[in-house]
Length: 151
Image (cartoon, rainbow, N blue to C red; front, side, top):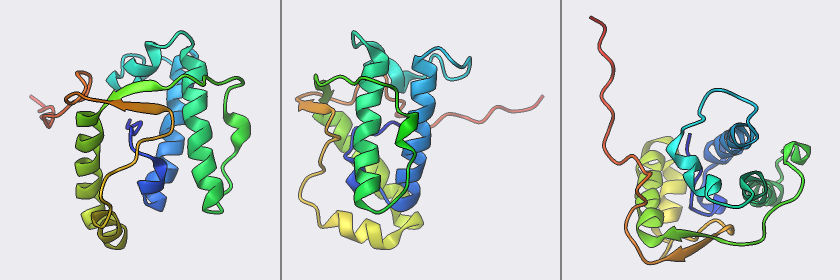
């Protein structure tokens, strides 16, 4: 699961659709409607809010706005009611880490989008986040996980 700190405008079509699905899954998890992903580290910043479901709903609304801007038909009826207006702090280190992560993905998946993003002076953050000084967030997994080996 990747719930980007980056603005959804930076994502290629596959990435935007994946974000929509993953953020909807995050909403389901935060509502307590699934047993999987309950301890996923990316949800920590939403869980830290007074109303985690409202926070993920606000996140989803911005993703839906970007999808609508591109002419996509995401079902906005799936977004929980309400929505927080308070911005969630996110570190500049996290934003830049995700930027590099996205660039690596797009180099192969969507070379044209990769070239477009290389022209950007600075990545924009998702509208829900307020960028503050700091390193990569402690919940981010930065080392590749080793595959489980069958005995």
